[in-house]
Amino acid sequence: MPLKNDRYTYRVTWSEDDQEYAGLCTEFPSLSWIDKTPEAALKGIREIVQSVIKDMSQIGEEIPEPIACKRYSGKFMVRVPPEVHRNLAIQASESGVSLNRIASSKLSR
Image (cartoon, rainbow, N blue to C red; front, side, top):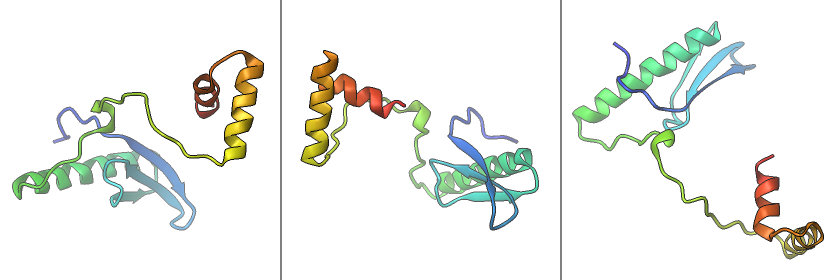
């Protein structure tokens, strides 16, 4: 039976080393599932996550919250070299916008 209300972040990618598809779950970075098709890799990783969550529940271990369910403030600090800061400030000034707007624009590309 599939995990009820599964809101975890999954990705399927080609594994050149294995010559098969790898199913991954962002919230459980140590887990993966290798299979011949992308669909099978996704099904496999979802099943292994379900199994691990069941085991974690039984022993009282904290289960990771799905990224999709977390709230984000939209604020975080990034350290950059002084010359990058200066160049961004110049670009912002020349464009008539704030430094935050320039940085946000560049990060969202």
